[in-house]
Length: 608
Ligand code: F6R
Image (cartoon, rainbow, N blue to C red):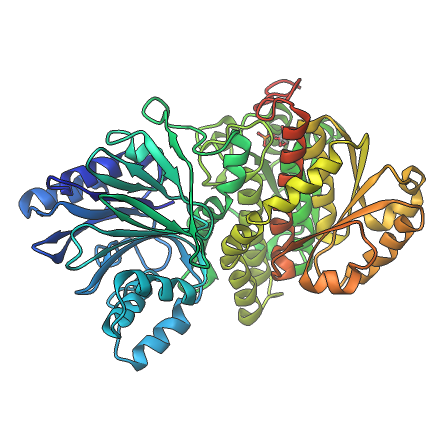
């Protein structure tokens, strides 16, 4: 997760930009840079590696100027070299960027026809070139940015500095957080309030699609359509806490909304974004091509992530997968062929049952792989290979951002397995990786339908029981929807494979029972339609989670529809987590429960 900082100051800013970037080090990075205006012209200093290298560069070659932007880069497109480090600049504009510009190739090709050529391998530079072309065509900075934002697709946080504009920065947010800091005589931009803590605690957060023109007088914020909007100014307590809630009421909401960023961050560790190919950083202690079977154990939400991956590994890699709840696996004494591979999924890396399952597998000659969020945890230490989820600390007890990161890794591993086993050719693998690369922006769009979830949560909060249905890889998402709802709202909920409905649970359906159907358009959606008709015929009230196409095919006669962006069916289970997380969250808020620390639950379950 890259870090962004901007200052419109009254004294030289280069040193303070680096100071603020140091507070963003926790986000992880592999190069850094700053740009300021010296007598109206853009000047930059950039360096590979840690901020000390940038500080040393600035010491030997100081940078003047009282306005500037800075960046810590976590390499996505192009290696972590000085030339790829941000800010990217032309003579007219400098830009720093967090996220992914999905359509940068097409845009670069178009720019090239007008003679605008990149000097780096990044996706970011296209933004600087697009703004420059608009400026060259006679637009002012604001209009040039507005025109550019309409052309780029993806998930991003952006900050712009313009030659000759000593009192203006522009910022834009779609998927990656950005905060505006209000000083007494100065103004600031930052990826979070923590970066701004030494300068100010008066903060306004940009919302999805917002962009802002920041001057010493304040900030004019507009939504994506260009309409002026007001965003509340809050007083941040970030100086005291590294982990804080930002502008969210609960950590769970903050963690749900971080997902475009946390998915991107995790993805860049497993995928070469420029090549759009899976590129695992560590050598595997096993060969997917030789594997007869993969054994997965985990608990709770981690188990459900494993269940989704079974559909992927079996379909795309023809690799048989056993997925077990770890507490069952450990006592079942399953026979394991020597030389097999066992995979454990755990946010905390400390869950007692998962650890016991791992030790059972170790004693039975398995190669041990784990997906964990806490790199120094016991499960990580006892594994032969660790696939880290790179989403930062998860504070809310109910897991959200760790789950989407786990699934991102499992998706990348299933592509790697498919290629190694000869079941995915390059074109198909490319298609699946592309779907993953496009996921963060789809997640960001899905998050913007939060209002629908709030409205529907009002109804759910009155229900005694709720049923979730899904088919194929969406079946585990139905299970997860029910798990999330029960754990934080205390409403009884069940998840079922849609086809199982008629084998028992249909007896529960009546007018009082909301039935949430997770059915994006795919090859199985018509089958789910029959199950929905079985529910409607018994007076059940269906809440359908689908996309535009799905709504046309199966959306008739339902009580409510939540429309998600259309994505490749491969990544639809990950995207579909967003509405089920938000539904559970808003229902719990309406019920007035302790959302972040629900009763009887612990974040790390280190007992049997
Ligand atoms: C559900 C949830 C739990 C955990 C489970 C395993 O929201 O958070 O079900 O998934 O306790 O925990 P980890 O992943 O730490 O092993």
